[in-house]
Length: 174
Image 1 (tube, rainbow, N blue to C red):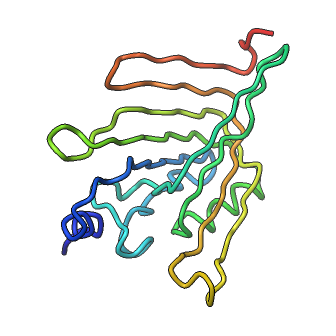
Image 2 (image 1 turned 30 degrees about the vertical axis):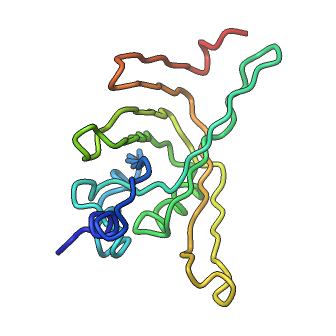
């Protein structure tokens, strides 16, 4: 069976956007993202090589500084998938999570290569917003979740360039 993204690229002959995948390990529930990248979870958007990852449509993170560094929640937009009920339980129970985001870009050979990784440790969910598009005016859109995440530490790694940095809550410079 052909992968949706491969078929789309071949038909349209366009460049593929950079992809983001997220893995979530809960202290109580275990691997929350298990099976999220399968056909049963997200239909024809599935990614065989990332079956235990959540497909992320977009991510947003903001750090500001006046006197002290202020890390705002890390926010992702994702499809409704197998993890959706489990994320509801995680926010309800204030479950501690370890989260890894992997960012992929188009390699010179044309395939996808992981070039950037973000790890959030000691994370908890601080918001879940579910958006069900209007079925008459937005028939081409699918339901999605906007998930906001607080964390105790964050690590950024540029896998291709070999650089990394981190911020731990009690080690931030004030």
